[in-house]
Image (cartoon, rainbow, N blue to C red; front, top):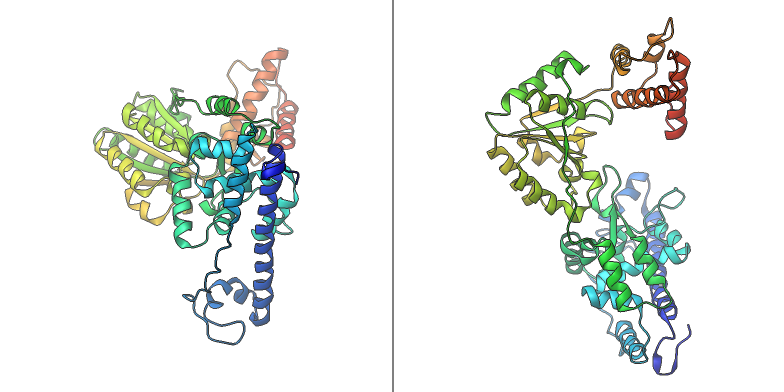
Length: 466
């Protein structure tokens, strides 16, 4: 590290090197502790089950052969005369007095970040500077030997940066409910399917990365950054879809079709909430469009996977204001799973308001099991959408192309039906084929052209469909 006289930093990079050096020491202490615990567990563990449950029994069974208790805590180490954060603050102020600005301290002061949030930014920045931090993260996150992200998880950040349970709870609540980092789209929590919030990865926005690593950060540049990536007005989240889908357009089991028609009849008498469960492409959105078309209402829909968690409150407010008669919420597991970021109170209030309105609310997700048990009583119906059978696929293909598309003689529909594709995939591939046919103005569409489109889909998305 290069520093000027009086402890001031020469530039922003010299400051970052010092902060990263502190982080590396923190990580190495955590690595040493984890290695020690692993070694001690191996002395007693006799099976995989013992190793998996070590977090419970090692608090009761002393690894040294002496009684131990979870409530025991080692005496606190007396603080040093000059703690690290005090030394850094003095050097930051000395640097400012010399007219040199530092990126992370400017961000901290502008957004009034807590020490946890400031260090969270540093933790997320480190693997963008050197991948050795990523290797340490993977080890501490038990991802060694598996191809995973280079990013730290929320769980790792809380374990490293919080000294006790109280700090852990305070930091988590602050981050998930009101952190300026999320409000200004500076930090993204990247969820993994059907996983807990603690396992969300932390990723800084590219503009923030550029700002933190610049040689000459300034307050003006920070304001420009906040203006560019933090729009004051959020775009409308609800999409209005008026695609005319009739009941006869649906290719579904008769029992499922009957349940959908029952939902339609319930719509005007009371507020109904229903759950649509099924893999992507099984016809959930098409079924919702058919209900809306039958009711002569537009379908308002939103995909929670495309909405940042910090915008959930704005979305709820938009729904409350517009009061859509038929509403489809896709990727609903983001709200309904046990570890959902949105508070249960907010979801409960949303359900209560929709029940009081003559409305139909459809919640769509891949797996019914992803829904926390305490939400089950709110659903007036749970409909499961299965992958289409070969007979279903035959009908889907025969309806996929407009009537004006001429087909080659002896077009083998059965050959297409044998290919295991979802409803959505068949429609997407058929649309691609139709667009290509419209461009080339061929006289007749051949089976080989459709099969080539299927093969192209397989190669593009890496899906085995034959």
